[in-house]
Image 1 (cartoon, rainbow, N blue to C red):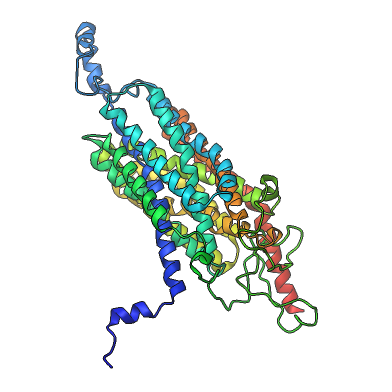
Image 2 (image 1 turned 45 degrees about the vertical axis):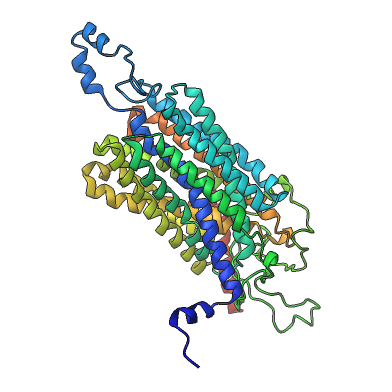
Amino acid sequence: MAQLPPGIRFITSFSRDQWYRAFIFSLTFLLYASFHLSRKPISIVKGELHKHCAASREVELDSYKEYAAQIQPVKKPFNASQCGWEPFDKNNYKQLLGALDYSFLCAYAVGMYLSGLIGERLPIRYYLTGGMLASGLFTAMFGLGYFYNIHNLWFYIMAQIANGLVQTTGWPSVVTCIGNWFGKGRRGLIMGIWNSHTSVGNILGSLIAAYWVSTCWGLSFVMPGVIVAVMGIVCFLFLIEHPKDVSCSCTPSSSSKTFLNGASRCRIQMPTLNAKENGKPQQDPEVQHLLTDSENCSVSLNSSGEGRHGTSAISFLGALRIPGVVEFSLCLLFAKLVSYTFLFWLPLYITNVEHLDAKRAGDLSTLFDVGGIFGGILAGLISDRLEKRASTCGMMLLLAAPTLYMFSTVSKMGLEATVVMLLISGALVNGPYALITTAVSADLGTHKSLKGNARALSTVTAIIDGTGSVGAALGPLLAGLISPSGWNNVFYMLMVADACALLLLLRLIQKELQCDADHTLFKEH
């Protein structure tokens, strides 16, 4: 018999379950990357919506009549203003651009709390498909304002509000799906790699938007809108919500006997010898729930949860009572405040400081997201190794605050310094954000008190990300209000936000360290 070709040997070396998991991992990665791809254009186009033309105006003001004649409305194909796109061509442009960010993010924050509750009660594939098609429509709608010469501020605000609402269908859906398919082993690393879809989407969105921003900024929105809608069709055709739907095993096998604890991250030694004597069956590690009650570090196991269709959805208050949900939610509020301020204002900051055009500033801003990819993976890897989620987040937040101060100072020294600081800042800012929204949310969504209710994961994820989205809404708004007084003040605000995020985790960090000390003492005795 002839030897099989290397490629075929590689394909057959993986089981059917592994191929399905790889497919779902890749598909959900691309689906949510397309969501972020459609959010990025607004930050790139800001430099085109308002152009700096102060110098030319100073010359024109030498003669008021001459100046008045030059700004008389002359019929042009699109915009008559010399300083950008009306109404963003006025001196209050930062407040108006901040209003666009705020309208999207406020709608997203409010909608997220409802999205998880709705998502638990609808098939994920239908829910996510509808959201992606609607998001594609409203993203393109913003760009149509260019082609139809629309200068009404409320048109753009309503497009942002509608888009913010429908985009809330994405995160609870993909996290629930990935949580259904992947077990607890190495969850931090796996989800750290998976969560890089956020940065990949931001990078692609920046490059696509920057390609057209200087020539036809409407296409900077229309093209991402088309991509999101197409991915929505792909979702409808291929997304598999649960392994049981294709007769796959629910979780990948694992031989590990130690587990992460979400609120206090204790290492738990599984009973093996006395299981029968105590009348308690030994538990499969992958069925073991990850969190303990806040009062102690012991784990009461329960693997008799009902099937996913036989359990009732968890209530909002019930999810809040899970130990760690409130602390991580509030921490994410401040972490996301910092991350989204960079997401929406970084290109404009680079334009002002480095004096680059909108396209080059957009391209350069992608380095922050490149750093974010490494930061998310590093946070997941460290948290798996240390078995301490809160401590990992706290360590990165502690380093992020002084790094932001260095960024505000060093970025004025030249392009090379800016590149280095963008990479470092991106890693430290996005690391905790990525860890909390993925591995931590999945940990908390499988708390032992839920008794195997997999449907609760959507609500827990929505609460954590919804609370974080409040910060995401406040950050760009505050940046718009504070930046006229100087960019340094914006960075001070971001440093304070990082400090608040760290303070909110101190109780959980202390519990993790206490659990470690108790475990060490137990082993010595």
